[in-house]
Length: 94
Image 1 (cartoon, one colour):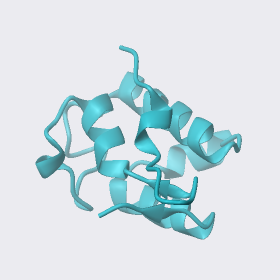
Image 2 (spheres, helix red, strand yellow):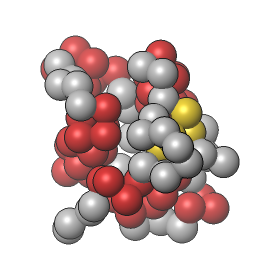
Image 3 (cartoon, helix red, strand yellow):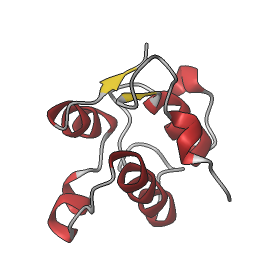
């Protein structure tokens, strides 16, 4: 699967605005209406190990930061990823 990670950044005057629902929707092959803060790697069958790596790679490309192994194992839910991005100064599009 090829996902254009730059498409998940919105042109709203800042490169720090991310459409995280769109990113998850593309990687997990789910409608964006099904993406919520409750989704995680244990409750979503589409979020397998390959999808997890795709999510991490996308986050690295979007943020420009390498994500170490310890952090990779922590970023296993939409809610935790939202907090991670917010700590880096990113804003999620509505």
